[in-house]
Image 1 (tube, chains in turn green, blue, purple, yellow):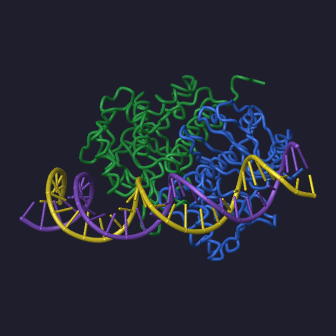
Image 2 (cartoon, rainbow over the protein chains, first blue to last red):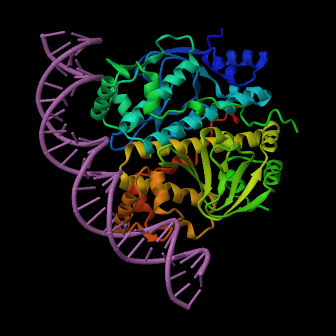
Image 3 (tube, rainbow over the protein chains, first blue to last red):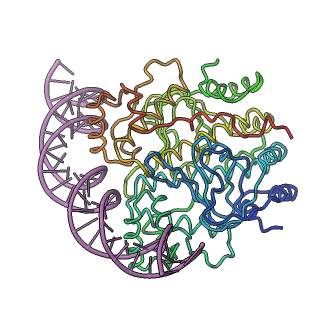
Length: 246
Length: 246
DNA sequence: CGAAGAGTTGAAGACACTCAATGTTTGTGG
DNA sequence: CCACAAACATTGAGTGTCTTCAACTCTTCG
């Protein structure tokens, strides 16, 4: 049962012993299929579970009173949403499946109990928080500093990097299952302008457009255009102070 | 020694026993003065400490290669920067004092040791992460969805709320020690346009302009204009699953 | 076949930017 | 104590990126 992308990813960065691995896998037994378009968490309702994405893509979003929607995070296989999603309801945010998905439903208590007993798992969870935090700050930078074309390229670069990290063996890595409307709500642009940006990228040979998604065809060009540096996705040694015992 | 704004704030939301309180206070013994404009953490260098803001304001920022700067977080008294700031160096981010400050330098190991022993403190730290995360997502929404005027009003509302939470007794709550240039880098606008927005807000009677800062004069108007809802700053019961034992 | 969602394109307009100059305060050194 | 520099703030004019509005096409699905 090592088809657990969270475990796969954590192992690359956090030292986890056999017991930890077993415990983590044991958490994600309650697995469910989610249909495209389903609200995993409804804005306003309470979230009773932590969700681990096993396959498929989801978006965390908020709808403002004037009807505009902002996607605040994209959730890929291996993403844990989240220790923090507990407060989603209070933030009036929701989570929606962008594709058909497999999701493991984890009881918060079970995870917290593990955290009490295992320093390794506590460590790993800190690592997850770290990356999540870094990612959301990278989005702030992207929205605040870059204009449409590099902003889009930067997002694509991030998503490419993340898909490769979570499912290293997948071949269709370079496909992003996001409609132009969803991209617009992610990038803080209008659908119309997203379309124009995508055609520009297509003309430059960096992407190919598909219905319901985008195929990336020249990653290094996208990285350069978006001045992407993915260091924040793989923090080296976390200064969790494990090595320095005293 | 209860002049510790972190403890003050945590107590409002997290149940902490006497031992926890004592331990937390014992952490912040290494207190230092920081001059206005100092880089507490330099982009690129390693951060050896966790910083607890005792007084004053700081900004977490990143400078892009083209010279533009984005402020990704504003740090106020009681803010812990942070369990996560360990990776600031890898993200090429820095932290700068926007005012003269008092900062407690905490050894990461000391905090992690506490987290191992006390569930209450683990709980409290989770609460901190929760709020930090919610805040950065609120910024994403602000940058992605709102135009300059409401965006500015929303930021001001957040900062007003946060100052009141951390230092409830301060009377000069409504003063924001941010230059227009710093506001510009926070809001993703140009200094010129920030100036115009501020004059508009001043004309509407919501703020008064000072050199080196802004005085908020009509909070409820700002909240309305920025459609601010501060629920995310005070998550009620965190579903950390403490109450439901089994 | 009709409807709904996604994508595409054009034209006009607005919000915010750039460039540039000028005013104001603060601090520093002669 | 004055002169000067530096940082911050202000204002105007022109420009451009992105938005808005609107129409139309294409695919998918019931």
